[in-house]
Length: 246
Image (tube, rainbow, N blue to C red):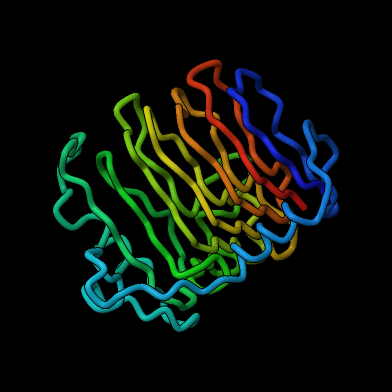
């Protein structure tokens, strides 16, 4: 396992960090020592308690997701993402935030939304988990991969945020990616664990579409996949901090 500490603007195509058999084969800039390891482990294992008046839309209470690990929650979560955003426009100034209480949300199809300024907030990477159904047809072909979560394309995909969530692509999904992520000007993936249970899948985080930043990827743990984080654009530079690939 490599514990990585990045504070850099990246203009390269090869922080891909390919992983085979659970081992990362390339790394740049490692940080040794217990404080970093403990801070990341603590962040992943923490279950966050939020006040009742959180001010976010609860995917269970408002949209009917179950989070029981067996009910297909794809339609409920997609309904939450679509609510108030049926048109394909930027929605600048109309931010939206969804709250995922602790639970395992079973997913069978890719999730995406229209417009900028979307926040997905969980109670912790081990507490609020979006888990892909084993052997899901949409994720079967590695030559036509899909992500569990895909942020909107373009250079106005501002302020796309994922906090304190787990994303598990399950088993027998060789065409799966955890997050196909771009966010322009600002955006954050923080406190997120992305896992392939059998090691299959293209990438934990894929950032090969145009204009993937500026954004921040921090306190992220990725296990499995062919690539931990795959990038492929010269602009604009994301910043990476406290990344663990395994």
